[in-house]
Length: 415
Ligand code: GLC
Image (cartoon, helix red, strand yellow):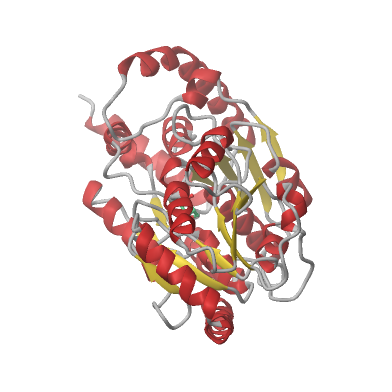
């Protein structure tokens, strides 16, 4: 079996972290399969995939296509028009590359690659769209996906909530929900830690300080502002130090905070010295092990939320924004704490509760680890994906025969 994966971004956002686990789990389950990854941008994902034995080709997007974003607030025609010519050229070269590679299955990750995959896939090659985000609210992307939906053999959604959104948009498309999986040996309560104060350039915190971290890319909806406001609401007696862990990683214009903007917000809220910025950290597991509380506080429904299961797997008390797919991952008060998206006062109350109650932190952390072992092992991911691949993979001889039969039928029906 030869599978070609297509991904727009080379940096490690949530969808790329998910793809890394997909590649690792398929590689472990089927060492003889030929796995290829075509990236629209160079970045850390390339070497990571190569180390897993995946053949990687970086075919950079033209700049206008990379920057093109769909915020859902309307279709901006000028950037679309500017990107059109470069995109058509890109599609031509991608199509030639795919014809040369002759994949048995194409698996796309990320909206731009879903469309390019549908546009350029060699005839009769099954196409899997791995959908990580809601599309219904994106005006441009939802129209385009509807237009290209006929080329997709089956879509994988990362949560039931995302599957529901997709089903509303494309009722005839076959959609399967497959939850993400992670490496439970890496995301484990045991292992190295990181000196977060040093990484963030802060004075060492006093002993007894509770370290609370928001681990997220700098996408605007990840709730950095809410996190900072929640920290600012805590009384000065509450021994908490906050950390913002992550950085701006996307090419799409206007979609993310800059570090300077967030630092300014922190200063404006009087949080100087009370919150540290670590930048992007590759070793997310060590980073989480160094925290007492892992925070996820997206202001919009989160399609899945890798950080939630990673924090749980590290045996940490997690506070998560309870909406969308994220709310399928935990039970409030049992294996994590929830809060309403965007509600800084409620987030502050949950942080305070955990800061004051070491037993609750321990209990949630232990229950979180048990949940991760039961539900989010990446072996389960491989099992579900392999079943899907085997289902759609067609024997080349059988596909050839069908093509000949269809061509004959077309000839007979032509007067
Ligand atoms: C996207 C989603 C995020 C999810 C990740 C992996 O980044 O926004 O919620 O965790 O994909 O599926």
